[in-house]
Length: 294
Image 1 (cartoon, one colour):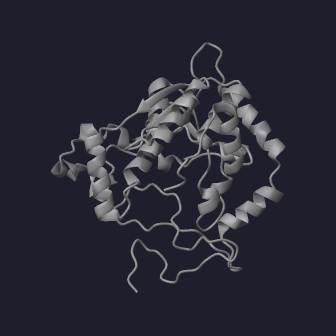
Image 2 (tube, helix red, strand yellow):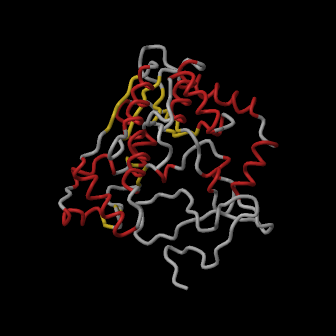
């Protein structure tokens, strides 16, 4: 059998859920053209790490202690001079609404929300985004060059069968770049995807911090791939280096000098997408798609 990207030849499904060993885990997607993709890990009992972590967080984690850690983190970064003290990336979906609203109104932070615009807004998506901001939030909306984004999307589909890749890269890079520009060291994402995609072990799911390898590069000479094409070769497709500003991660040295840390709210709060939906609906009038999911 011919496999790509180092995926296992034998397909195995978890004995408790529908995850297979073909499901990719989070990784810096634009570092190498043919990098082996880490996939969902399984124990000898046939149970995936996502199910294993679900049991762990329901039985082993002291959530009162985790909240104490959150308060200590926020107290360390809280500012009283009117400046923003935390960057919260989000689209105005249920999860980003929950994170931003909770941190502002429960923990008295002064957040700057950052949105990496989708290639095309749906009517309900735009409405929820605006209702989120009207609940009391400043926002930087980064809309990538539609022509450039379209080309990158086509390349990602043709070469990787993954048209979502350019959007994912922007999601990871936009908030740290804004944090660097505005001098805000603390960035708070919602859920750590490693909690349900952990490969090999659960170490990454037990870490409150995003690995800097996901949002930084060591040097401007690092070779980056977009849609399977090296950055320097994108000019053949009509894309200049200047067009790629928001797609390129900040330097590791810049992040270290600015003391930028990217945290996951799901480490500090027992994460429940369903509860986040009810919270967002109550506090911002969040609406689900009336036509259901596409």
